[in-house]
Length: 201
Image (tube, rainbow, N blue to C red; front, top):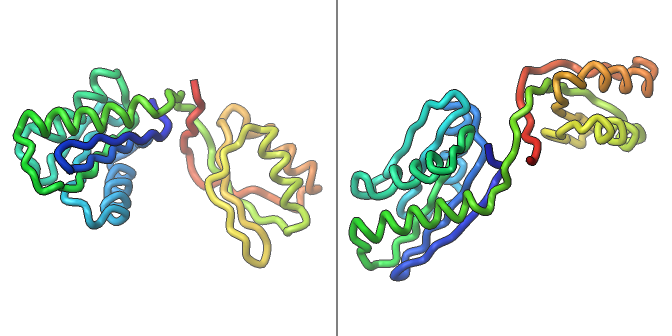
């Protein structure tokens, strides 16, 4: 498993931007691909490959000649024994054709750089919760969550502060108890879903 990483490769004025991103499901893969295509809307191609935690894999050449783009990216993941990750390589065409060999080399290099710059991480089962606190109590909550090694998913500052966090499943009850004691049971986290967190190895 990887945490996020990026890499670049250039050849004959074409630029290849590689992104390695943790990915747990087909749905998440689709969301990541859509986000990158929106972010790099002016790029010629957005090639990708992913291997999910269950071993299922998929790749796309996104308009490049068959076998010259998605498959080399997938091979980078397979060679590294990496699962639970997607690698996307965005290409800005430089006006000069690279040929099949040049494309394979470029996509392999950009994907390889992204993976090399990513950090190996361990997937850990976690529980996701949401809760709201006052601005005055925000720092107290953050202190508790930091002590529980919780991962903050989102923070919304509105009338109060709404926080979504994930904590390791085997540490969840202790975390909830600490929150209850700190706020005299006035703050009750709402369980949202089972999820995962990524811990660097």
